[in-house]
Each structure stands twice: as C-alpha cells, then as structure tokens.
Amino acid sequence: MPTAIFGSLEAGALYALMALGVYLSFRILDFPDLTVDGSFVTGGAVAAVMIVNGFNPFIATIAAIVAGFLAGCFTGLLHTKGKINALLSGILMMIALYSINLRIMGKSNVSLLSEETVITKITEFWKQLKIDDAIQTGLSAIGIGGFIPKTWAILFLMVILAFIVKVGMDWFLKTELGLALRATGDNETMVRSFSVDTDFYKIFGLGLSNALVAFSGALVAQYNGFSDVGMGIGMIVIGLASVIIGEAVFGAKNIIRATAAVIGGAILYRIIVTMALRVEFLETGDMKLITALIVICALILPKVIDRQKEKQRKRKRLKAMKQADAEGRGQNLAAVKSDL
Image (cartoon, rainbow, N blue to C red; front, side):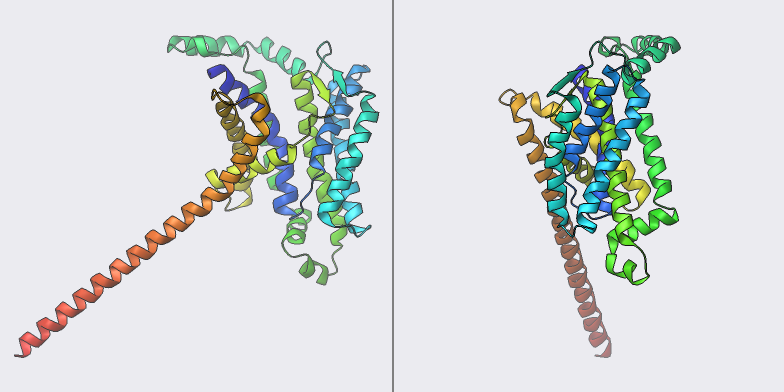
C-alpha cells in the first residue's frame, strides 16, 4: 500500500502540469476546451519520436511544448476566426489530433524503455547527489525504512517543477497581458468595449493552456516508458477533477491559492483513485467510472455542505431572535411590575 501511494504521488506531480493547463482554459478563459485529450498525446508523441530518433530528451520535451501550443492556437483560430462554437471547436481539434498523432508516431505505440529520457537523466543526476542514501538512513533510524521507495528523484523534482510553473503562472496572470487574459474570460463584452483584441487573448490563452498539457504528456510518456495514441482518453475529465477537488478542499480565494489548490487536487485525485482501486470488487477497467464518481462527488458535496451550513446559520439566527424576544418580554414585564 505505501508503495502504491508513493506511485500516486509521483503521478499526481506529473499530471499537475496538465491540471494547471485545464485551469487556465476552464477557469481563467471560461472556455470548455476539449483539445486537451488530443494535445496531451501530441506532447507524448512528439517527445517520443524525437527521442527515438536521437534527439536530446530536453530538446524533445521543448518541441512537445511548442506542438501543444500550436494545437491550442488552432482551436482558438477555429473559434475566433472560424466563428465555430467553443465546445465544437475543441471537439473538432481533438478528433483531428488523433490522426495527426498517429502520423507523428507512425504507429499506435512508441516504446522508450531502451532510450535515454528526461526521467532517466533526472534519476542519474539524483543518484550522484546520494540524497536517497541520506533519506534512507534518516527514515530507517525512526523505524520506517521498509516503506522507502527506490528513489525520491521523480517525486521531489516533479513537485519542484510543478511549483515553478505555478509561480510562473501566478506572475504571468498579474502582468498586463495576464490581466487582459483574465478580463477576457470574465467579461469579453466589456473588454471589447475598450478596443481590446479579445481574439488574440483567446488564441494565446488556449495555446498556453495546451502547451502545459503537452508538457505533461511528454513527461508522462517518458515516465511510463512509452507513448500511446490512446493515452489521452478522458484526460479532460481528470484535469477537471483535479481542479474541482483542489478548489473544494483547499479553496480558491485568489490566483495564488487557486493554482496551489490545483496542484494539490491533482495529487489528491491520484491518491483517491489508487485507494479506490484497492477495493476488492473494483478492477483497473473501472478507472473511468471511478473518475466520473469522484467528479460528481466533488461537484455535489460542496453544495450539500454549503446548504447545511446555511441551515445552521438560519437556526442560530432564529434562536438568537427568540432569545432576544424573550428577554424583551421579560424586561417589559419587569417595567410593568415596577410601575405597580
């Protein structure tokens, strides 16, 4: 069980980048972008093919980010210049990317098990630092040495990377360009009244969102050791689940807190799925059902809790009013008696 939880922490840190991309499109731009299911695979496909063909894995990952950015921009162009419905433009791009991803890979699956990837380079660098040995010694001293994984490299460095991206996003959304992007998502009509080109901000925002998604896809492909044309199915639901769970558990009063909540939500989602799959009557094939149930619960529970809190507040107000009324009557009775 501890090993499974640790694996879910690693996966959550990797998928946190994808969740931040989904947050950017759904929450900031208020755009239901279904391109995510395709651009996630595009990132993995581009990175995998370039690595197999001898490119440096870091350069391949950067190329995957650029490919994701272009995919998002095309979705934005379909919506803004082609005047296609937002939801439909994402669906069309997602469908198109399925064939594009097959073209990129040349087949449905590309193996990276015998290739040098970003993950293997990170692991090798981490081993040279001998941090695992220090952690092993410290945890063994307190009696939990048996639960220690082979290496902490992926978890530590991916969490750091996720928070670097988070800090960069926080900074960007406070710049003039970022504020215009947020304003476009909040009230496009008002922004247009100030002669601002909202089409540009939509295209750029969707490009940035899918760049993060493709970045996550490239890292996940290298982490798993393969890129598959079907690895992006249901990714938009996972991203939404991460955003919703994060906001429900950690809150989203401001941008800084919201982006941190998204990262926490991605990790928490993976832990919930891992624990759910440990239940005897559930199988690996039930993962999509589990995801759907998690999202439903994340959407319904906060509303139920809010209703209960509102009922409690009403009861307290009613009790206070009755108490005040009783005290007022007592004072009036006392005044009458004093007059007599």
